[in-house]
Structures are given as structure tokens and as C-alpha cells.
Length: 146
Image (tube, rainbow, N blue to C red; front, side, top):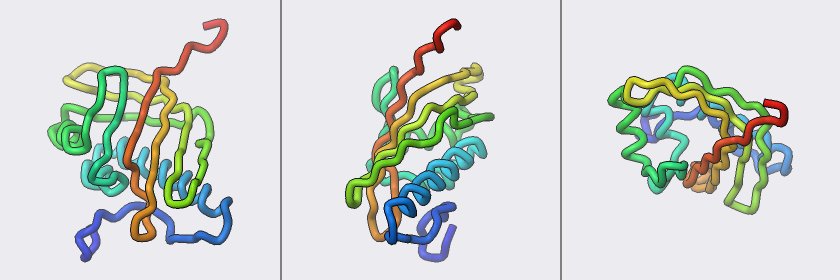
């Protein structure tokens, strides 16, 4: 954690020079966040989230503190998280979306879950830093022939 009290992330320094630079920056943030999740490091994970972050899944809405509490307690762990597709990043001023197909292996309450999901994260830029305010996951349909 930095001396300012903010969580350190692997976020590259701000560069608003080109749309390509912002897309690359957000793609790097998404990758670093996935690495924090696989490390099961609640403080690193929190560094990517805005205070009002929520995740929407088939079980409903889970807020930031509940999600981080599951990680801190060890009830929720991840051992793998891989992008199946590169993220589709779109920047609209100080708001951005990143959508990708992700596979992951999680353990919740002692049970293993393997997921193949489409994820969309909504980011806002505050004080020069991108923070996620919303994550939405949707199970991916099986490929044709499966």
C-alpha cells in the first residue's frame, strides 16, 4: 500500500494521448485485476474497485464489502482466470467498458466451480485513475458441437 493510503495497483501511468493508449491501459488494468483475484489478495483486488462497486451474476447483486469479505475469509478463492478473448474496450470520456470471455476456477464454501463467462466491467476515471464501478457476468453458451 502506498504512503498516501491508496491501494497500489499495476495501473500504468495516465496517458490520454491516443484512444489506443487508453485501450491498452484499460486492458492492462483488466489483466492486473485478474492476477490480483487469482492471488486471492483482497487488498490488491480492492485497489481496482470504486467504493460503490457491485457485481451482478445469476445469484443477484453482491456489493464490494461482501465480495472482499468472502475473499478475506478464504470462503472464496480463485486458482485460475484466463481470457478466452481479448477485451473489447470502449472509452466514453471518463467512463469505459471492457467486455471479454473469461474462464475461471473458483472455490466457494469448499466446493470447486469452473466457469466460462462473458464479463463486462464498467470503469470511471477519477483523479486520473480508472476504478471499476460495476462488473456483470453472464454464463457463456456452450460452443456448437459441445
